[in-house]
Every structure is written in C-alpha cells, then in structure tokens.
Image (cartoon, rainbow, N blue to C red; front, side, top):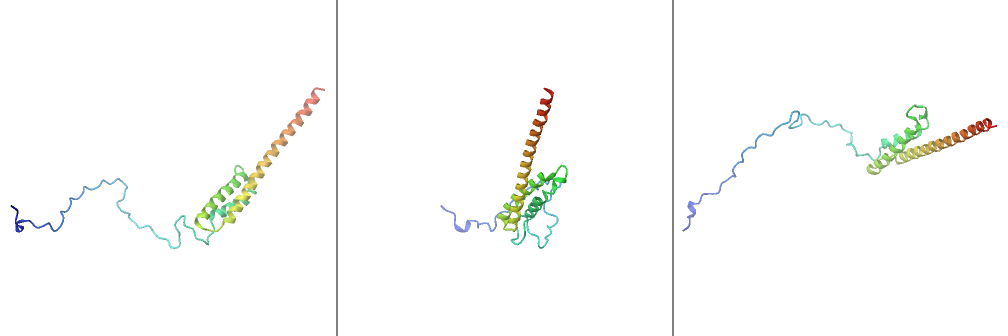
Length: 151
C-alpha cells in the first residue's frame, strides 16, 4: 500500500536559513575593515618594478662610492676601506636588480665594483708592504744595536 500522490507534501521552496554565527571576538586595536583607503599617487611604481629607461640607484651609489673611496681616507673611523667595500657590495646588488628589472646602469655598477676591488687590493698590498718594511727596519735597527753592544 502506497501513499497517494495527493497526500505527499510538496518539496520546500527555499532551504532553511542557517542560524547566525556568534560574533567573533575582536582584539583591542584590530580593525574589522580599513578606516581609510590607501591613497594613490600617480606616477609612482610599486617597489621592485623598474622602468626600462631609469638608471638603477644602487648603480649610481656604487660608482660614487668607488670614486669617493680614494678620497675617504681622510675620514677617521670610516676610511677608504669601508667606502670601497660599500662600492663592491652595492655594485653586486645593483647588477642583480638590473638583471631582474631591466633598468639601466649595468656599466656604472660594474665600474663601481671594479674600482672598489682595485682599491681594496691596493690597500691590502700597501698593508703587506708596510708590514715588511717595519719588519726589515726592526731587524736593521736591532741588528745594529746588537753589533754595537757586543763589541
């Protein structure tokens, strides 16, 4: 025995509405929505996006530091060694950025690196020569003193 079709209830027209969830706990200082929109400044690119015609800033810094390292020996504490090292590091960073973004300045970055490396090499050679001269001067001075005292 079956149920006649007239006794079957019709399907519901809309699904039952779910119960609203409990309100979420808000942490002090946390905003649920931004209070202001971020201002848009026309003409500015997002960071990391380079313009093909623009020269990379780190390339300029590298070249300026490379040239300036020869004159930086008069600065106490900093000296030419530190500035030459800055030229090498910023040149390396600039070359990597230029490869990624397509900016200009590869030659400037390379020149800054080369000048910095040459300067660092010259400082190391000069330091070694100075140590050798001090050693030779010490032997000569103490050698003369030892020959006079034993005679």
